[in-house]
Image 1 (spheres, rainbow, N blue to C red):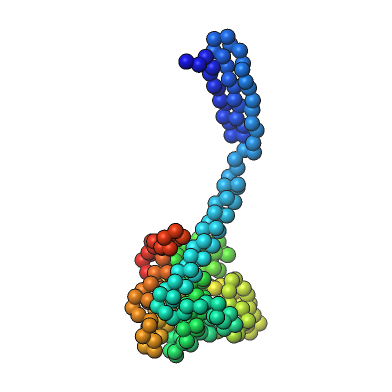
Image 2: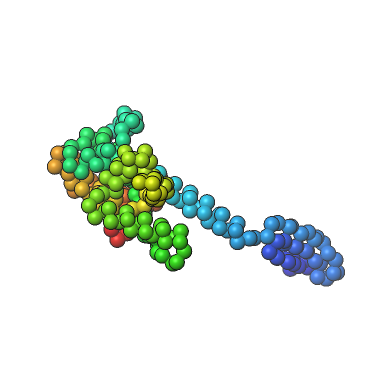
Length: 239
């Protein structure tokens, strides 16, 4: 059995180490390592970065999966030929009533996969703070418009009228400033996508019920991608 004893002194900003010969009392080794103490703001930054990476990874996986179901259905096999010059919002509105080409349908559905809304609106609850209250009121106004319009129709109107639709911006009408926020629930995007797909199904027999269901799972689910097996496992929400 060794006569050496290891001692550690662990603090929030340093670690001390010592090795002692318990028979002779000799200090065989001693050292200390100093490092920056943990701070709450550092944890917040790391968590924010981690969440950002997770969101980026999920967006990428949804786009890959969208390509996959188009390939499986024979709708598009060469994505290098898909135009990048078409307005996806115009196509989303057109697709509600009129036939889209396979390429146009892909562009419209890809746009919705990339920007699929939020599944909760906790930040919209009014707690007395004026800025939060303003946000809640704007979300209510968006919800009111959704009673007669899809997110795509609202977004296209804003783009045509103001030249902008994404983000949080302020416009002036009749001498008054009006704040607009591009915030819509995921359920509204799902309802729009379903209308588009059901309309296109009338024109295109390749758009099957399985295709529609697969797309809606991609749009509303949260998945984890396995490169080795090219599989997705989805945790579906309530929509």
